[in-house]
Image 1: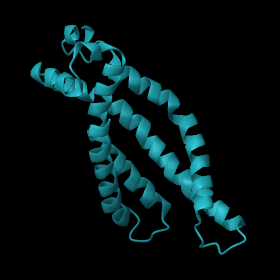
Image 2 (image 1 turned 45 degrees about the horizontal axis):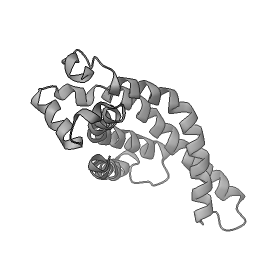
Image 3 (image 1 turned 120 degrees about the vertical axis):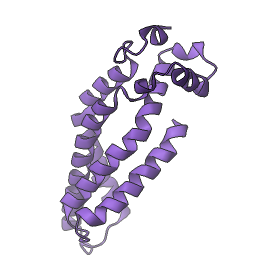
Length: 172
């Protein structure tokens, strides 16, 4: 996961920052701008993350004992010309992560605004406790909503017949 986390997050935050200004018309409080930028960032970063997630899931299921490690597994997949296997779960990942991002940003901003409204301090004071509480509430809600989609995504990542790509390779 270390091979994909850095690049995927680099893509995520780069795309998010590029799109945020455009979609929010350079007004930082327009929620739809943040949500749209987050969805675009998710689609872009998942293109990086999905391939290594498939490798991770396959190696966790035990097929990793047949290979010398992550790079050996990737080399064999590429050698067998089954590049599409890396992205077998991409659509499902997007179908999971786009709603996750939408709910995440909308809930986080609403929770943060609500917490700031009840704060005895200035309503513009965004303290750590506000971010932490809003983040915890958001995480709990979003996880409940998207966990079923995560199960489906994992099934696509590890299924034996990845769109008919040389099933014998995946069964070994």
